[in-house]
Image 1 (spheres, rainbow, N blue to C red):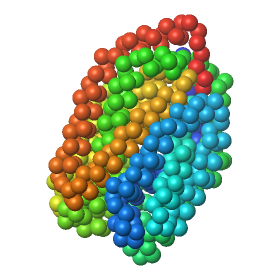
Image 2: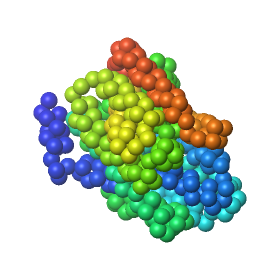
Image 3: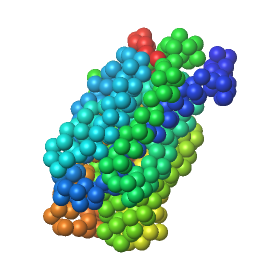
Image 4: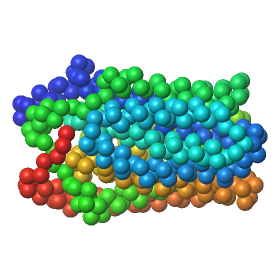
Length: 425
C-alpha cells in the first residue's frame, strides 16, 4: 500500500516526469491532423469551388478518402505503437503530414492531385494525433489517468480555437494557397518537443508503482465482448454526425445568413467548449461512472447538432457550436478511458486502432452523405442537419447498454489475471 501511496504522491508532484511527457504530447495534438483537417476543411470549400469549379460532393470525397485511409491503417499503427517506441512512429508521421499540407498550396484544376494528397495525409493522420500519444500517456498515469487523458485531448480543442480563424484570415488576406502553406508550417511545430520528451514509462517503474504489470484481454477476447462492439457502433454514429456537420459547418451557417467571420468563430467556439467539457470530464471520470458520463456528453452533442440545424443568426450558431463542442470533445476522452478500463493496456493501441477504424467509417460517410444531399437539393436544408442529430441520438441510446456488459468483461479480465497473463507497460 505504501508503494501505491508513493505513486499517487509522485503523480501529484509538478516535478513528475510524466507531466513533461504530457506537455509535449499536448503540443503535438494541438497541431495534429485532429484540429487542422476537420476544422479547416470547410473554410476551403468556397475558395476551391471558385478557383476550379469543383462540386462539394467531389471535395467531400477527398475528405472521405482520407478518413477511409485512416480506417484501414489505424490498427496497423496501433500494433506498431504497442511494440516500438512512440517517437519512431510519430516523428515521421509529423513530417509527412506537414509536407502534405504544404503541397496543397500547389493544387491544379486536376482534382486527382487533391485526392492523392488527402490519401497520403490519411496514411499518417493517426501517427500525429491523440491516437499516437494516448498509450504513452497511459503508461505514466494511474491515479490521475482520466485527468491526464483529458489534458492530452484538450490540445485538439486549443488547436480548434486558434487554427480556423488564422486560416480564415490568411485566406481572406493572402489567398487559399498561402493558407495551406501556413497549415504546413503549423503542423511541424509538434516535432521538437515530441523528439525530446515523448517516451513510454519504463516497464519496471510501472510494475513498482502498480505492484505488478497490468493485465488485459487479448484482441481476440476483446472482440468477443458485447461492450467492444457497442463502443465501436457508438463511435461510428457519433463520427458520422460530427464530421458530416463540422466539415460543412462554415458553408451551412453562411448559407443560412450567418457572416463568414461568425461562421469561423463558431468553429473556434466549438473548440473552446470542448476544452471546458474535457477538463470537466477529466476531473469527474476518475470519480463518477464513465458510462453515465458518456451518455451525458453524447446527448449534449446531439442537442448541439439540433440547435445548429436551425441556426440563422450568429448567437444561435455560437450556442449550437458551444453545446456541440462540450459533448463531442468530451466523448473522445471517455472512449479511450473505457478501453483501458475494460481491456487493459496489453493491446490497448491495437484495440484503439480498431475503434478509430470505426470512427473513420463514420467520419468518411457523414461528409459524403451531406455533400450528396447538398448537390441534389442545391442547398443545406435544415432537415439534413436534423438527420445528423437523429444519428447522434442513436449513439446516446447505445451508450445505455454499456453498463449491462461491464460485469462479464471484469470477470474475463480477472480470469486472465489469475492465469498469469502479464500486460506490457
